[in-house]
Length: 543
Ligand SMILES: Nc1nc2c(ncn2[C@@H]2O[C@H](COP(=O)(O)OP(=O)(O)OP(=O)(O)O)[C@@H](O)[C@H]2O)c(=O)[nH]1
Ligand code: SF4
Ligand SMILES: [Mg+2]
Image (cartoon, rainbow, N blue to C red; front, side, top):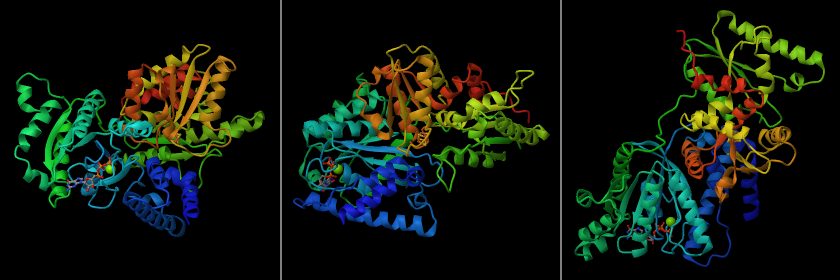
């Protein structure tokens, strides 16, 4: 039974359709079941029960997917809508401090396994939840950070990644456990280093609370040690700038759910005041659209395009434009014809394309053309007037739109990466980074087209090109070995992950660029300024 069900789940999760409908974490967490092997300890029994429950839920979801035509993602905590901005909340602390108990207390359900065996939570467990005072959230229950051994180090790294990708970090502390307090000190330090706002929950059972005389003195002294004590701040001891509050609660008590949610909501409000280098302000997909404008979407649909729906960036742009009362025109360019050696085929395709543009612009309202970046070799030259050498229409790419959106408007940082690309020398290494694990076939942009273009420009074997997919990025020990990172549009990860990557790269002094920018640059410098124009050099809307 085990292998049969796991095979089904693996097959489903590796299908591009499911992978592109679900956020990657969702697919991976569904895949990541504990094995139903020998049941020796109570924690293993609990893991087995959780596995069975998840399999049952998954099988119900898959039935919906195949039999009712409803997207799997629609039924998975709202994740299926095209893009939902969520507040990421990481629960961190030492082993047995009560992190999983807090996760279950917040979600009011048996989300994580709780057990007195230290190290029960072996990997980051993610769930989604709506909190009235915050909105849609993603909660991360993390492994304890004080486990010795190589495995403990791997768990610690996972916790650190969750911390870096969170908008607020909840540090759970058992004040009667020295290791728990020590870990809280390290973790609050990491929050400060990574500019992550945090709060502290002292997890004290009612029993202990009644048997300890000077609990408040003890908590005061720990707070001082953690640099989160107001009194010491007045005494000129600098308080951790990202601290948002503390509370003391018995996580297994009846009031814990309401108390903890209220506390986290209050701390989240305060966290917005804490300065961060990457504020999570909403970024518009496309600025400066004229009222009643028309936007031309060029979607060539290559062999990798799944049937039944548009890719996520295409669907996002489509929905955004409709909401803005823009008129959307979707067009499928035949790239094989456009790149053919048969001149007649090329001319026919070009005529079809230019006529579409001309017809749409008959009222002067055609404002922008957005193309798949791999078609830049055609779209850029075909939209330059041969006589005047002027652009006949503004253009950009889906990839550039996405990277600007996912990085909260930091497009100019990706533009600097183009300078680093120009300066590459023989012997240098670059890293191509794809944020998801989609199935790669034929002339894939990341694995085939860009490496081929690098080889063409710098000569065979002169530049070492490494490629990572999805979570492989996290395994890179030394980012500084690379002279440049070339990142995809990042549509399948969240903004927090993208910005955590940017922060790590900035600390390591490694520049980053993006597929859309690079493929444009490979056409010409002019193509780069064309695709970035809507953000970096916008023309004022005429109405
Ligand atoms: N009475 C009481 N017991 C608690 C409380 N919080 C946690 N426990 C117990 O402490 C043990 C560990 O709790 P977990 O929530 O699994 O701890 P954790 O931090 O997730 O531990 P790891 O997954 O091992 O890192 C369990 O036996 C819980 O029942 C609490 O507030 N009151
Ligand atoms: S842009 Fe990146 S994350 Fe989105 S589908 Fe392409 S490779 Fe995956
Ligand atoms: Mg746990």
